[in-house]
Image 1 (tube, rainbow, N blue to C red):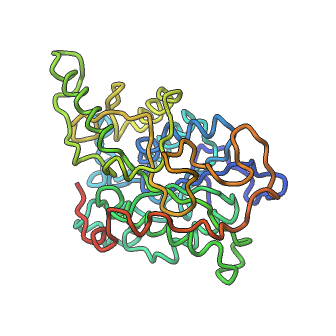
Image 2: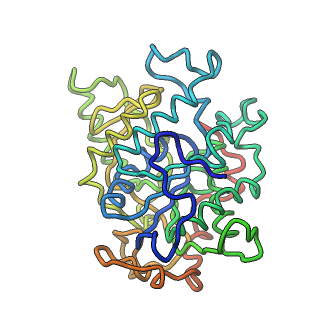
Length: 355
């Protein structure tokens, strides 16, 4: 059974698609608590505010993360090893800031453990997400997909954005689940088949990142303006790609404060000083509120950048009520625009190195 995250106000375990589902449904699959707020906080807040059902699935509790506040250092995995349960609470607070009520852990809290960075012994630890069978983990996600029937899925690219094993595994599990969910012969006990119309990977346009870092360096040059000593490198930002790769840009300007507040809720992992933040390495990065994506499955309307993840999906126009009768159970003809042409190979992902 899939268990909603601690602190959530859970949706009904089973919903009636004819009466209970809003017109727009967005599913995000992430590796650890905090990944969602950094990558998609403004997107999640915007769609939740507009009445979409936003479902977050987090694959681990983030037990292997480093701890920023000295008073909480005892929670580290090499000491009390209590960071995971604490981060469950941080995630619940972050979701309150974003207005998201449906957040879950894949298979329930603690089913899969944080695998640590690539190449460490924790990768092969019993229960580590990296060592999980992809099809078994995907089946847990299929159950959620068939329940909430999202038209849009957001996850990482094959390299997980920056080579972390849990991010790579989250990509594999999400994409496999998207393949299995519409198959009527796969686990009919998990619900009626459902095909996701559009799949996106998290991306950061190089141009926006460069502009953000240039602004950051100017501010760092003013003594006492920021609590951070140095800037990170653009190479340390997950998912940076050339601007032409971006297919979709979500204007998050109206939700900048919500995103910052959600990131701030992950206090063991992130220090926020708007419009910047730093992780445990104490290297500052720009806090980007316009969030960008690459459409890898589905049809893009027109030749320019989309401004709505639901563009082109029947019955999901902003402000127009829809019903399940308007929503296709399959997305025949919507597959494959850029998945094969993405800049990251699956083989490269297997050999990725965590930062």
